[in-house]
Structures are given as structure tokens and as C-alpha cells.
Image (cartoon, rainbow, N blue to C red; front, side):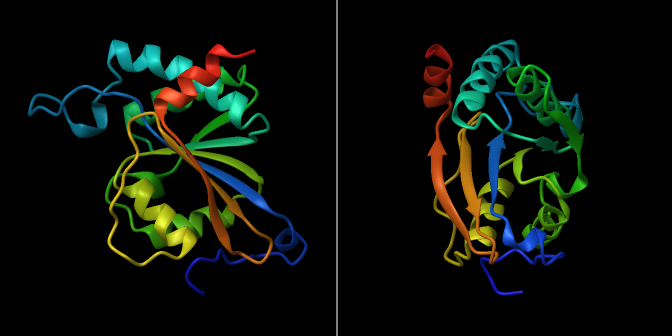
Amino acid sequence: MVEGTIPQEDEEEGRRERFVVLLRHGMAEERTGAKADEDRSLTPEGHARMKQIARGLERAFPKAQVIYASPLLRAVQTALWVSKGYRSRVKVNTTDSLIPGSDPKEFIEFLASIKERRIIIVGHEPNLSDNLMELIGVTAARQFELKKGGCYGIRIYADGRALLEWLLSPRILRKLAETE
């Protein structure tokens, strides 16, 4: 596999473009020794903001077909808000390829296995930015990260090349939710 490309399994499927949104989970409880990391929930403010962000994401990316989330509680809760933003038309699935510390190459393989063409991925930093860099073929040291509730929009061309088309902050997504 050439860096910056997604392997295409089926020749016919390989001719179709795909669009992937990488969304960071919402604001979560602080890390403490009292609670395992995977059990950390969104805060009340995190829930409220994700409700708004989800509506804004639906306006920015209206034709999503599937949502995949890390199995950690805060990512699943975020994914459920996103599904509600799409009036529950988009199903939420979980995958271990999105847990913190996962190898970006494992994510690339997982992404190649998804049949749908318009995909939302809910996960964690620095994984999401590392996955973005692997997708677009950037090998320099990562100098950026998503804010909680922010997202990247990536077009994957039929030949496997990937391009970052947009980056939306949580603030912009909340503003989109206010528009009709």
C-alpha cells in the first residue's frame, strides 16, 4: 500500500469516491483514579454541546450513512447524539480500531472494510489526527489536534488518494445548528 491511499477490495467499489468525517468525542469527565478511562462519561455541558454539534454536523454532512465509534463510553455517547442529530436515520456501531493508542494502519484497514461511502468516525485524540495524517500521507510530526467536538472532513478518491477538505471547530458546528 502506498502512503496516502486506501486499498480497494472490489474493482467496482474502487471506482467510487468516499467521504469520511473524523469527529472527536465531546467534553468528558476528568481522569481520576476512581473511574476507569473507558467509563468516563460526557459531562452535562458535554451532552448539551454535542446535541448542538450533532445538528450542525447534519447540516454540514447531510447524507451520512453510518457511524462508527470507539467503544469507550464518552465516544459512544457522542455517537448517539450524532445519530439523534440525523433523526436516528444513521446507525451507530463500535470498533476496537478506534480505542486510544490504536495503530493508524489498523484504522486504515478497518476503513477499507466499510462498504458505505459516507462515514462518520467518532474517536479520540491524538488517534484521530494520526489517522488523518496516515490517510492523507503526511509523515511530518503532528502539530495539531481537534478540539472536543471538532471534526475533519476527508474525501477519499476512487484511486485511494485522500484529501482533507475541511476542518470544523465545535464552535462552527454549533453555529451551523442555529441556521435553517
